[in-house]
Image (cartoon, rainbow, N blue to C red; front, side, top):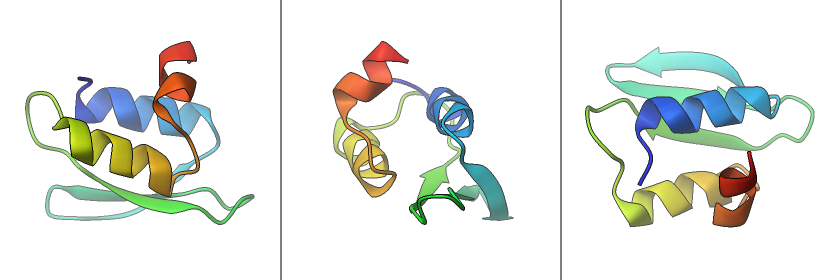
Length: 68
């Protein structure tokens, strides 16, 4: 599984911007599509379920992430 930094890098590359951060949680939003998601910036890999939920909230799936 990828780390939080990997996911944030992927989302920023797809047009997401950091709207705000509260503690260790970064809120990312794509102003063009309106999608919004929250990524917890904890060390280590993201749990599989959380990783897939973040991608779903952002309008992507696992294959989109793997293609980068």
